[in-house]
Image 1 (cartoon, rainbow, N blue to C red):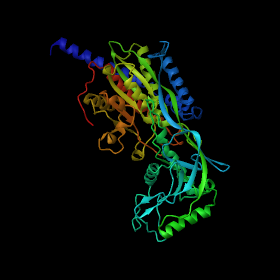
Image 2: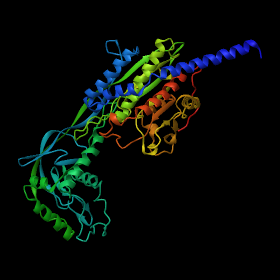
Image 3: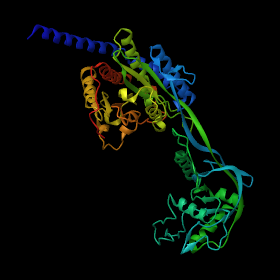
Image 4: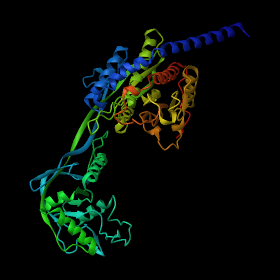
Length: 530
């Protein structure tokens, strides 16, 4: 062999060995104790669950920004005055319930405590309405509560469901099978019919009482949150009035100035005869159901490390900073794993790369450490970044996303040395290869691709922030250790985090990132898997 060729090969091998030694040296700075040091702050009760836009979330943003600055990273977002900041600010918009109440006699009934609302209604100012009973609120050739009734401009109180005999036979089906007038969406049928008949507002008397009623109200309140979900764009609502107030017999009796026993007697007579009631109760109700607009001010945290000879190309390493906040019962959801584990992992990765750069071993390509918000609400922070990138997406070589890597799931309770990888082969075969090689050389964990299967019903590939990069054509890896019993619950606390395990996964991310930012060729997009 030619001596010059041999010398060149030896030099290349030595250079590669030294680079590997450098990577291992700086990866060693990622320790369980440092991860814990940060997480006891990020997942502390004082941050109150880091709900999107909350003071606790903003404290978390301040905390990670402080360390990024300490590590020598640069802010690249911009304040209105042109100064640089670590905070990429954005807004979320939502329409939600303002004042909602029903007043009858001298009693004022509370929304989602004494009654609930089905559907969407906007009554911005208090109104009063005359109310009449109208049986079950049904109009059918064989039975009509509306026959010979003047309900135009009035409100009606109707019974839930449809007439049913003592043996459980329904009037319209002639059997124990329910018709369209019963069931979970029958209120829509009745409310739509009432609106067509000129009815102002609909009140439905539920059959439930006591604890069963309390439970239903709580459940309906949770379901109604879809009407208050935030979005990245201002919300345009057009309530069409297909709605119903669901009340107890007690509330109905107060509105009608009668007794519960008389209301129940009316219902029993209809059920027995299979004919509309010839009796009627009347009353008056005052109500308000206000829809209001709210704005949530939140921010991603973006910390930049400039590369050397390939600095125009950038690797993004991401995790979401926020969590779900405080439960309705006052319990704090600290989100130590979700995604406190990812948040503190970014700090350790930033420190490791900063140590390398300080010793002249900085990355050839640039790195953006990106803590996004709004993940729990709908991947909003990463979506905002993908639509308003601080660095061109065409120059973004990959996104390594970390979301929940501090625990074990049921499938691996006896084998904690694993991590689920999702998306690594979807867009770039080279990214997948680099990841596999990094694990083989440095970590030797089981790389579980169960959730990478497009047939997996969990569809995790679409459920974390990496997806907003992937859908623009940026190769991604999502690091994840699975769902556990404390997922989105108050029990997701620091003392349950397996820091030894977590540190190894963070080292895997580091070695994968090290290769991505230092290799000669940028990885190419050569796969288009689902």
